[in-house]
Length: 121
Image (cartoon, rainbow, N blue to C red; front, top):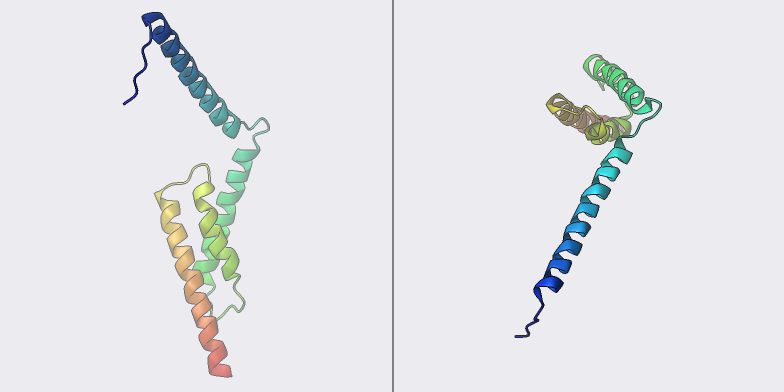
């Protein structure tokens, strides 16, 4: 096994360098968080509000427009919305439940459409 011998001064200097590097990492991580949260024009908040309003419309459609009565539901888009929900700034457990419901609705709708096509042809 190899060993290294350092004077106390050399060890102290290495320790200071490690401490400086760790402080720099923390500072850079903080800058990264701040850069991700930067929103000078309030656009992120407005996009979050837009998303919330659009979700209200989607919920209404899912609840009131059954696949057998409304042909060509955009199930791919419904699934994609469900996938993107976790990216909302104010994502919560209700959103998680909604994502599960949306995905299930889209899957069921796809199945209904496939069965309808098979029965016709």
